[in-house]
Image (tube, rainbow, N blue to C red):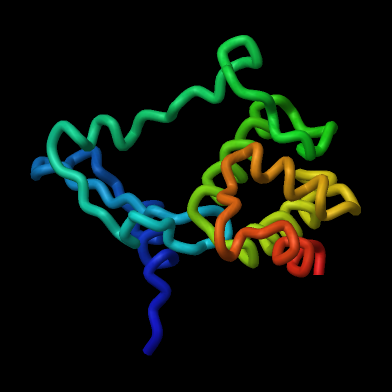
Length: 152
């Protein structure tokens, strides 16, 4: 019998009624990107105890343009609200930091299908923007290799 751990955690979290809970608080945090891949340096499930539990529930504010020191990802769909646009920006920034070119291209294609980004036809323009966002340029991240994977 195969059990999907993500679905199990999600079902357990939705079904918890903690109003009469008197034990120690233990949190479960899944460290993954929006594609469903476990992020590098993370583990699939991580237990958090004590004071660290408080930081688990905190959501970092997305912020306004005035609060951000960086420029928004150039290819965010113009019809997205500002908060959603910054979420897409942050997701892409995490993606290019931790994933390989094939996963990056698959995720961009998925975002294009969800109408969250408008991608340029030129792979060179997209490559330059992803490098600006933090994508490495070493082995396995060359512009030639990226062009072969882009929008296929």
